[in-house]
Image 1 (cartoon, rainbow, N blue to C red):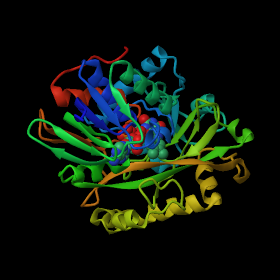
Image 2 (image 1 turned 45 degrees about the vertical axis):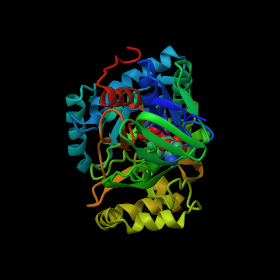
Image 3 (image 1 turned 60 degrees about the vertical axis):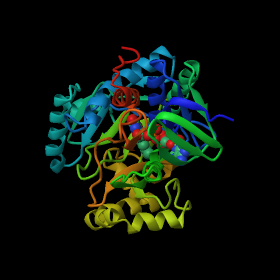
Length: 408
Ligand SMILES: Cc1cc2nc3c(=O)[nH]c(=O)nc-3n(C[C@H](O)[C@H](O)[C@H](O)COP(=O)(O)OP(=O)(O)OC[C@H]3O[C@@H](n4cnc5c(N)ncnc54)[C@H](O)[C@@H]3O)c2cc1C
């Protein structure tokens, strides 16, 4: 039997892999997506806050800033075109203590530099948006929204198939071998050939890079983000999206309250070290992976630098009282009995050997043209928002071809 062969093989059926495959298929090239789970979007894409980020937070000039701003508009347009659930709600970023004001001012500067509309509000102004919020000042960002990324990913998958692409579910990639003119993608159900390969394997992207003979220069450290659902009473305290001012030492946005597209309100995600790559709860432990995580030099440095924050997050994960206290900083009327566990996602956060938490998206090319592999090595939040522009960016890196946004 001849080995199936494609212009591009994409490893990973999350939103980034699917958006990449879609960009490739739009140019008429043949493409296959290989996903080891039985369904698309089973990991980060299907377990996140479902927020369409505006691009406010990100360092001007970086990938995150450029691709999130483009992705915010494109995600809304895509949802409109395909009749997918979404709403442009706007959001508040709330400063609760005076020492947060300089950081809020920095967010304003970043937002202005990134072309993201934002307005500073005093207490009366913030209460007009969110009557139950407590804070000393806030930023209002009108372009932020909510959606369902699993539904978006499934729709992109449908479009890929419609354009002739193949989606292989329940098929794990076990190795990647570069050759002069193509790349062999080894899977547990036989080989595939790609002239070029793109690896968008999320929590396992560093393993895949090593499997392809590349030194990723980073290790993926899985940080679980747990959510707490609000009772009906507490849900009445939240109209839209209420965020804290983030701590710039971490690439996480802080525990926020979100009214989802289904109308339910949840708070989260926190950030605790997961005990397995797909460690969705404290009970999900993979001793080998955990050992690899805690013996990685970069992780030891993260632990040395941020142990206080780490223990704080662990405490809030294990103690409802501590979690409630955190939420009460912005929403003082929330009570312990209002909260119930509401699932978790695990972030694939790239960490360098020197302990730096990689902030921007990270793309690493192994060669160029036929026989090359492009590795997406850091695509945490806001990569769901930015997925469609990321797909076009990757296509351009592979082929030099520039595509227009899907829907303007
Ligand atoms: C708690 C949390 C909250 C977040 N909130 C937001 C938000 O509100 N807005 C936003 O824009 N972003 C948010 N994000 C980030 C966003 O979810 C991710 O940036 C995005 O989903 C990344 O997509 P991906 O395709 O790279 O990864 P994934 O969705 O994780 O997909 C990777 C895929 O690769 C597959 N795979 C791995 N190894 C193999 C293999 N060997 N063979 C075949 N397949 C393989 C996996 O099964 C998986 O399906 C959040 C993330 C988390 C965890």
